[in-house]
Image (cartoon, rainbow, N blue to C red; front, side, top):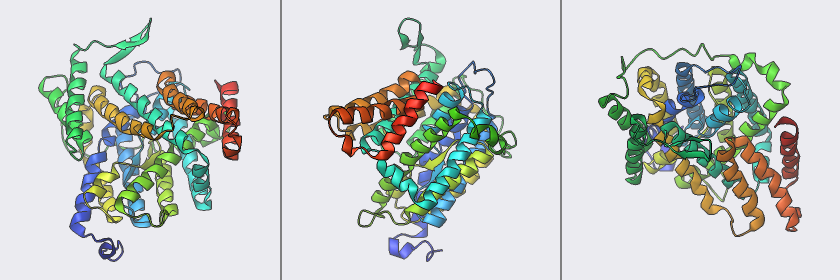
Length: 442
């Protein structure tokens, strides 16, 4: 094992890698709670006609399986200390745009995730994935990440009851005296405190402390058990495969698939570069075994969609494990083991409500919005499409719409500024795609 994972060459050892893997798991364990609640649209009272709720228990198990498979492949094949799990932002798009806005059933949405995963594998094997990533201007990549962050935070504020609807002003401050809202505010304060103190796994611990607080004051019923047999994935298993025919002939679903592809493109690429840089893996400005790393999240997305969860991607929380000394793929293998172990603790999922996870969504939004600082705001032709991308996501309640608006305005502002030659042909193709999206599908 030491030889396979190159412990000596990387200056690490079994104990350090184990602790790093556990640290990474604790930093991203919140996804086990947040993902089922997000995909099941907990807190949303009315669903569009023809749309039903996905089974929370099945999603919990699917989330753990997808995270374990992805992290294991990353650790063994690519040998990177990078863990994977269903991505935040991508799960929000799955639920709040695909299901709520487009009124697409979760079965078909999973099929869309499956198709995107299969396309990912083809693009990765052929090397086209890296070329497409390089074709998108960095400022738009940054804007998409920040926009998703604002959207996720907005959902968090809604779930907490801090922000509510208003017939006159669209949104307004909610009733902060409501017990559930007060619990969410308590959780937000605790989470901010833990994160400010740089406590590893602060988001996860924030959820735990808030849940315990809710049980103490009687807002949440105590769990009937702590350990039990993992929930069955039968309610979701294979739904993606069964619904492939209907998805492949739907123009609207191809827009959804393209969005899944786009967001995961840059989420994974940015995470790989960030974590690899921190771990000192990048050599001569190149990422060794990049194809294998990209294949890991592609394969995990396919597996995750079949068992019943949204797109699986690399997690920036892996930097927590790297900071703890993780340097080899064994760190990811350890994280995968803990995700499998977590399957035994599914009863605890019942005590985690939308108000409890709301602070986690807000904190994740804060972290994702950090990319705003790197956008070239002093160049108006860049600032306009970037701003419209960021602001349109929460205001239209749609990640896809934000991306579409930004990608339409970017070629226009660049051409008007006389910088048309700087635009990659792929961007012109995307301009046409998203323009058609507004003309024929909205």
